[in-house]
Length: 193
Length: 197
Image: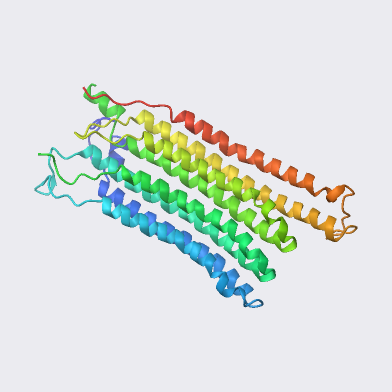
């Protein structure tokens, strides 16, 4: 794992070199992208699950149409969590103002904080995104069963909505972890003089 | 600390393992919770159409599956508190030893939570349908059941014992996530910090 234990073009010295050769700005941006896109995938999955059951059941019971749109709103909330996380992470990734000379970082650049922040933002985005996939699918299935139950007996709507509330709480867990994670990530943007 | 030893004990890539532990803890246990919630939710719908007043009792699998998600959240927060950021002058204190320990903690909590959530969902779904069916048979069709079964001669048609049995199965299933979280908490006690001389 030391820096130069092999020579030649095609060898690398181990995981250390592999994982540090991608720029921390790259790690951070990928985390941001995964956070947003996976949350939207989860929300979309949930919306098509609940929406198809909703319109199918509304053929025979048109009264359920407007009340059950709340299930679609619950799914949309997981996409909103992804947008919030993307905005927070975007604010963390700072453009360097100093510490760059002739197109490369100077010697006093804080590499440790740089890598630390990059990994932190990546993992923050991935936590939020993947949790929202799970949460979105669960809300979608619960919303679909809510619509079908409402079509049969309208007193069941509020009771089965409780299941959906528990399912959307999982998305909140993900964004809590993501925000705590991103708090300790500080991209260096200048050298201390 | 000698420089080569410092590079070996606290390299720059150490936080990635700790952070992946956080990811696994959160994501996998919430996936298990989501599976349990969805599967049991469909069962509640099917049973609720038959007996709406039993839904409150049938919410137990949903709560137990949600608790798995909370275990993942707790483990993730414990791990996050222990991931130390570098000093102001750029000295790294987070060691690879601690990083691997945190990765193991996250994996153990997450995979156990996934398994437990799936178990609670599948068994909760069947338990809900069975409990509601037995209750329906004892109240509405005292002699013949939905598929020709006869209701039990016990008081209440044996619905209480079916309910107790189904809750016991879910409690045993929820224990699995607890084992994972206990192991994860013990693993997060491993801590080694590189000293700055």
